[in-house]
Length: 392
Image (cartoon, rainbow, N blue to C red):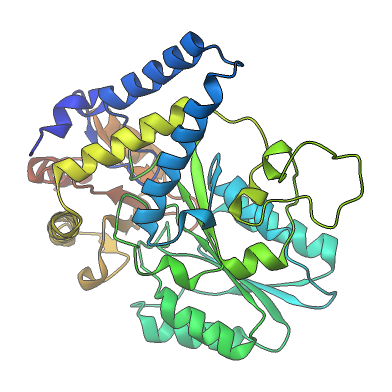
């Protein structure tokens, strides 16, 4: 049944919101679901025999829903807190040799880049940067070509985002996976899915990665502090957890005795310890609301239609330089205004009109995100206010 989801989201009642790629607004009923779960836990007793079946059901139900969205088996799903913990902690368990190489694109989040640098420093690996930012008119062929140029017999790990958070360009995972494995069979493809989950259909693509990290709090409009990873069977078998807790273990009994393998033989080996169970209910509710609001097929059409509208309207404004050609658009539209030196001040001026976009730090661009919740009137308003500020 069609619902009016916008009416359930307080953050959309008093502003015009284009920052879904940073953090999505939380529906009231998702917040209520979190509160209700807290209340249930306290009613059952936070540490009683009655609580464990409830908690296990919450975890299993959430993993099943996430695994369906990702098109993978739920045994390959581990719950995390965010993209950084989901990506960084597991990939640090990859067994490497001195002199091997980690290839990372120059369109990655600073936290992932910093972690990669430290991983290479500690393990005496070479960090290679895949240059994408300066490529004009990005397309799959140029991306594959650049990756191919940077691969060699020492390439052990490739880290890249499925949708580049600054460009909004969607990377062809299957093609990249083939290129990487053809170069070196025992290499690993690590994917940052921060800009995909709840945004585009990734059901048939995640499987091409060795590790794929997602988060609840962006396009899925769930709570912050919750994420998940897909890890391939090979990744589970060949790597060890870097941070170990009771959730990683097959059993807590006999832990003082020698054992060949203490850890779960599925993705749970990468989970650590106590986490916030009520957040799971919030994410499930948000995903359900988004699915009720529109089908996956219609969502894709809606987002593409809205992003094209925004692209066309911005393209009519003098001095605006759109980062990508319109045919590549999903929900992220990035642009630059060359004669605006203080970009943060420009964003603040829009904010005074209750319109919120953001400034990207690297490169220094503007980014506006359109969602299935975005309206055409909001796009018109954004375009008009940009014109007003520029004096057109």
